[in-house]
Amino acid sequence: MSTVKVSLTVNGERHELDVEPRLLLVHLLRDRLGLTGTHVGCDTSNCGACTVHLDGDGVKSCTVLAVQADGCEIKTIEGMAAADGTLHPLQEAFWNDHALQCGYCTPGMIMSAADLLRRNPDPSEEEIRHGLEGNLCRCTGYHNIVRAVQDAAKGATSGTSAQPPGMSEQGRENVQAIAETGLGA
Image 1 (spheres, helix red, strand yellow):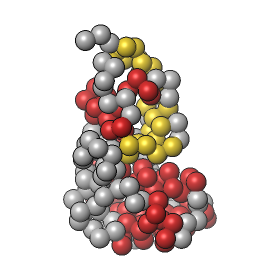
Image 2: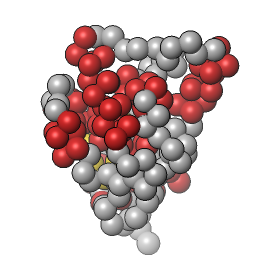
Image 3: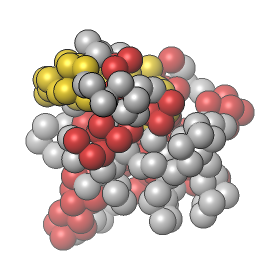
C-alpha cells in the first residue's frame, strides 16, 4: 500500500512520518511514536479512552485518520505535565480524590476534562457529568471523577493547584512515574 507524508506536532515536538492512508491517529501515537498513555478501548468511539487534543479540542483518536491530523497540534496525556514534571491540576486532582482505579480510562477522562475546563472553567456537577458522558469507566462509579474535575476547576480558577497533603518524597516520585507513563499506560 502507498504511503502519505504527514507532518504534525505532538506534545510540542514536530514529527514528519510516512503513513498508510488508513492508519488511525491512535495507532500512530501508540505504535509509531510510543505514546502509550493514549489507550485503545473500543475502536468505535464509545469509550473515550483514546481522547487527545487536536488543535486544542478533545477528539477520540480512534475516529481520526492520521492523514487528517496533517499540520495539526496534538496533545496527549504525556504532554499534560509541565516540563519540570509538575503535574497538571487535573492529574493532581485525580490522584488526590482517588478518581482512578484500574487507570485504563484515566488518560481519556483527564483529556476530556481538560477540554471541558478550557471551554467552561467553572462547570456545575451536571455540566461535568454531561461533558464526560462520552468516557466510560467500569471501576469508579464516576463520583470521585466528578469531584476531581470540580477540585481542579477550583484550583484552575484561583490560579493554584493543591499539593497532595503530607505526601512523602517517595510518593511524589511515584506520582511522577505515573505521569510519565500516562497514568496507567
